Image 1 (cartoon, rainbow, N blue to C red):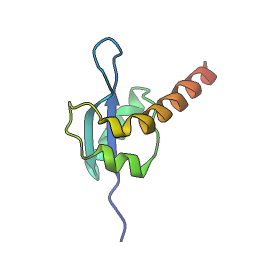
Image 2: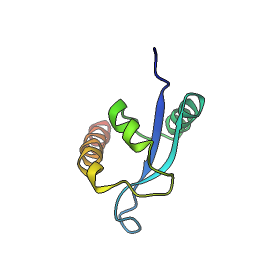
Image 3: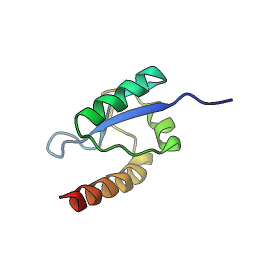
Length: 87
């Protein structure tokens, strides 16, 4: 059985947030729309099914729990490094 695609969008403003916040989350069609909007706006995308599953349990607007800090931080480092290489 094939699982439906899930997508979660995070936001982090160092001046405003203590931790990244979930700003959008969805499965199936909604996940596709989240990815489409991210691509149109030049937002970096990372595929990680396990992390997406865990993050999808968090209500939009809520900060991620401490248990996910390391996993999200590792992804942010990868994205920052990739962005630097493109510039």
